[in-house]
Image (tube, rainbow, N blue to C red):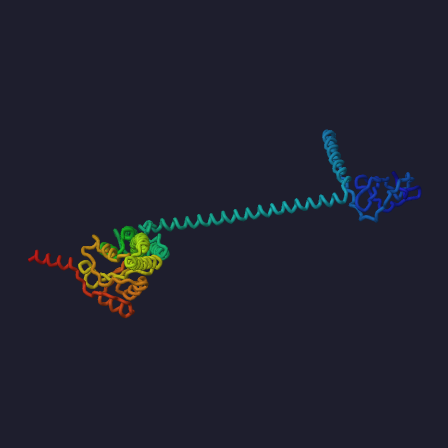
Length: 499
């Protein structure tokens, strides 16, 4: 097909006709969106030719932007006679690929181009996101490797420092206070200061101008060796004492360590050898921390023991109240049936007597229910044991038992040589409050300052009575003197045997 604009007298290209990007010897029609199938030979203005008429497209779109110029053919390379066949084969393959690519381009519309462009952009965005993720993972891995490297480097430094101080017998042994939440920080500080003194050579003192076989170098080496040996022996003694110290044994352990220091100074007098006092004080502090931890553990065990005893006491009280309520319910049912029978027989006198008994049972049931519901209600007791603790020690406590003397008798079991004497035993709806008031008043006179569940105080029964009266506590009976019959009779018998 031709174009009507082409004729014998036409020497210029009509509108919307552009050089074909695939064939330099022809032109192709551009409809504003895509190339059409209309082509025509290219007219050379310098040599006009007669062209056959071409059919104009049915619709002519407005002028499209200038399409991209056709790609320039690559420069031909020289081919030798021996490589002509291979070059021809390569050229044929290139032409085939080019034809396939041109066929794909020729069939695309503007919408297709835009769709492929959008798809390419999405693919590019996905590739960029994947690249960023890969970069982030690589950065995280690099940071982890860097941190691990730094940690290993620090471990190497710590290991070298440990080796340096272990030569002097200073080891990171398992100190008793390491597991303590309150003492571990102080222990770490003391240990760090001790290690620093050992590393800097300030843990032990010795002369610096000792001569051995007329050699200052040999004398210096001898002093260094003895210093290291003596310091190692001292540190070993500290470690053993820290592991063995018990609650209440701090004074003995520190005195033992002081003797070691004196022995080192006495045996090293020739070279002025001695443990530095600041270093000795640090190691003594380690002993204190070990003893404090031992005391805390002992107090915790004792408190747990007392707590279990309190739970058992509360359980006994609850069981007693439950059994009492069951018994009262049975008695009440019996009296109710008997009362109904007497009234049925017309025995009004007997019925009145049973009604009075029934009222007493109802009151007892009310009292038991009150005791069960009000855990603060109970009996306060003040007791003493002259034969076991002397005349100036009392025990102040409370119990919710129905029979409070059961508790007193339990306290005077085989764990003490004599039974307790009761000075006061009275019921109160706020027995817990009265007991707490007395404990606060005599807090400074506690016998056991570690375990506050041990309710013994350095006080006389008369002093406790004064406090009760000062707080307006109602007391029906109170005895200030202790009978202590078993103790007094035992003492008389012992005196008679001696005579």
